[in-house]
Image 1 (cartoon, helix red, strand yellow):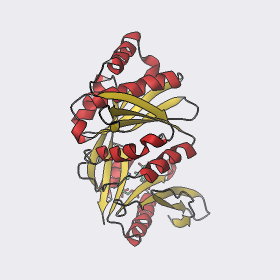
Image 2 (image 1 turned 90 degrees about the vertical axis):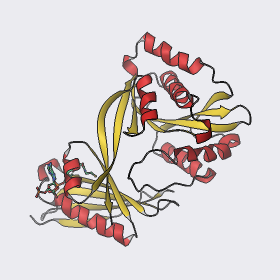
Image 3 (image 1 turned 45 degrees about the horizontal axis):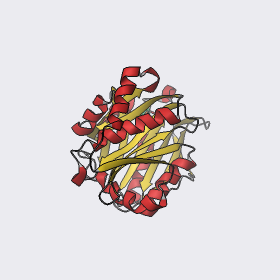
Image 4 (image 1 turned 60 degrees about the vertical axis):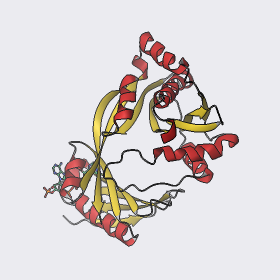
Length: 296
Ligand SMILES: CC(C)(COP(=O)(O)OP(=O)(O)OC[C@H]1O[C@@H](n2cnc3c(N)ncnc32)[C@H](O)[C@@H]1OP(=O)(O)O)[C@@H](O)C(=O)NCCC(=O)NCCS
């Protein structure tokens, strides 16, 4: 089957990188599939690209995916990349395709979901009890959207809490955060029409942020909310701050978005602390996703 690959212009340029796109078509121009390659430009990740491939279900197993992959890998090489990562749910065609195409599995992510619309009174009481339990030396605070100016510097500093997050063999790099990057990340969420809420634990002795937990909700407040990062700085770990912040995140989500159906979180399989927090708060594992990597 003849497969024609056309490079598309993709305006999706953000502060963290740019994206290349291709369309695979047949002889009479019918679309067969597409590939997107996100090329990261931020410091600490300029060796990395992330691939997303899609072939129309009726056109699979005819090498369309392989042709798109070849094109994307050549572009990644040209952009000086060392690693290409891609994600697929366990047991899906994507999982088999990546394994057959020279990628190696570097990380397993466990997805878990809290069904907000099915929480009974007992579960709600338990979450509220965690929020209200005092954590001596710390206080909780939260904001919607962009970080308030007076907390911007300490919030950017607290982002290094994610630096030692278990990523197993993934060549993810270490992202250096500053205020500009923090503001750009919040703006990217807002530009997509989504709602970002950040809960932080503040060290009462000096007002610095000891940890944070971010939740992103669709603009209409319906459907599924997605937990982004939750991290506690190494010097503040072991005081229950992760669970405290995530419980407050749930409480706020229920108050702010009463029509939200559920909250979704993904955690590296090897991140036992975070998985324990999710279990304790009532999140139920739904499926596993696999992060694959191609070393160029
Ligand atoms: C993954 C995907 C892009 C593959 O596209 P495709 O055009 O069917 O792939 P190819 O025909 O080039 O397959 C190449 C090889 O991958 C393997 N493979 C692909 N699909 C497979 C499947 N469903 N089961 C087992 N092996 C599979 C095979 O070894 C295949 O070679 P073969 O057909 O000679 O046995 C397509 O299934 C898809 O769009 N899936 C949904 C999105 C996704 O998961 N993307 C990948 C992660 S970014």
